[in-house]
Length: 267
Image 1 (spheres, one colour):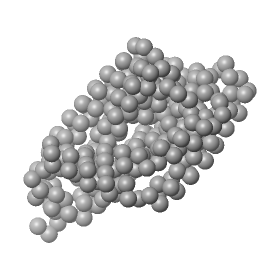
Image 2 (cartoon, one colour):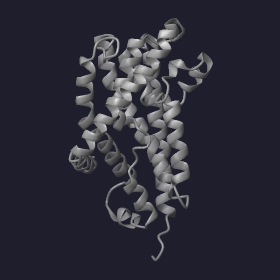
Image 3 (cartoon, helix red, strand yellow):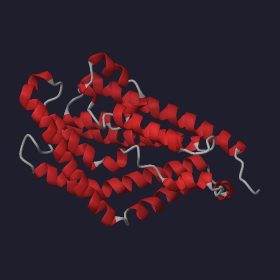
Image 4 (cartoon, helix red, strand yellow):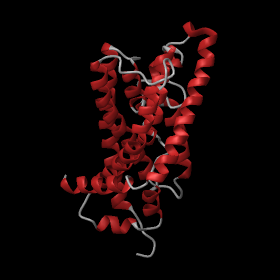
């Protein structure tokens, strides 16, 4: 376990070095979040009673989404891992006395957390200073705040476990681009990155909440904003843990099979 923590630490420190990229991302995400909130405001002014979430909760949801975008973005995959598989350098990875799946998993988590850490503090600070109802509100309760941290961690692990499956498909395909584009589109839509899941029809929402995509950013953002309460939060946390176990188990087994069947040209 210590060696995988070393991979996590090295990648985490490396990710903290990209301050200029983080500054550009902060500006982009702040203005994008502002545009989203203003767009929702126009709909709420027409008929606020027709929507399932309070506008204040929607604004909080969007600011949290932008603050932790680097952590939950499905498109934030490591091109280095795809290149290692495609160009044959996977042979060097196989020579290391470590598990490839565990190593890549630790690196992916560190990469996402480090990038989000550079961006989230300024965005959250500015958003919290904005006047109501456009600013970032406080958690619905202390319990919601504590549970937010737990669901945030589980959500990151679920998205990394899912992206690990995308990496592994590269062992079996000539190019990962098709699978990558499809998976990114599915995650962005069904995880609530485009439209919060409560805005879907009730029956559709019920189905979507059972899928692994809802266990990503949907759960922590809704817990913080107070869109989830009581038994609904407990059910969501259990589903997060369930999908983390399933995706990790499937990914680890597929990776082990791929390691035994991998062919490197020229050797």
